[in-house]
Length: 346
Image (cartoon, rainbow, N blue to C red; front, side):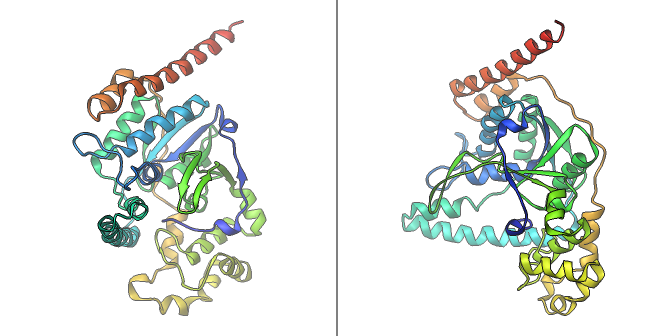
């Protein structure tokens, strides 16, 4: 879900090679949900092993991250901890959405509508504790650093991006990362270069969004950007205020400037919302300003080929031949680093 301010913020296309040698903090849940929703079979069901256990997330983690590592990226995956109580509304809406998608998927299945099955099947996604645990295990076996956030993963990733000089950017599809203060946000990094949509095949390019450029372009500060987000709708107040879109919200924050004056101007509209959609803007504002985050250190383990094979081939029926080809790419990366290290002595 997340914040939608796509139409009003500047962005630049990015080549993955531009990130060579850079360390990026990935919003892990966001990335795993991308894998679960996009890596699908023709009928919309996720990839599964012989025991009918979902493996789309493992496929994404392995094949797409090997490519990123080969491009020279240093990856840190940041996992969610305890979600704020305010996010329960979002969880409730997502649950309702899954139930509706399940009904529509069954209708499409009965009508042998494979397009509908794929469309609605991709919306029936849920990340459980077992999937999270095996994702961490596979990432660490690949030499990717794993960080456990106390609260929101994207808040922790943004915090690390702000406070650690060696963290170049945060990686997420959600613009909320900007409200948490991420200085650079990279989107579309985990998506396939070409993907099929309802209107045909489209090319998907990574893009980078610079917080300072966003604020300068919109002529607002971070507090006002947070207010703009709350007006449009965040994970903590998913529907925002009906009738206030991105451009109208920008007009309001520029006109009234101070948070209290901005929300005084729309107080009546908030009070007129259905009870379950009303929100306290101060509470949400505080969550973006003071999220639950901690100082974290990164541990980049050596690649453990045996563990990777055990997880993918032995436990989840991946093709040993295909896995071996990817492992060869990781060996090549290791060899290049070794040669570079030796070169520094001469």
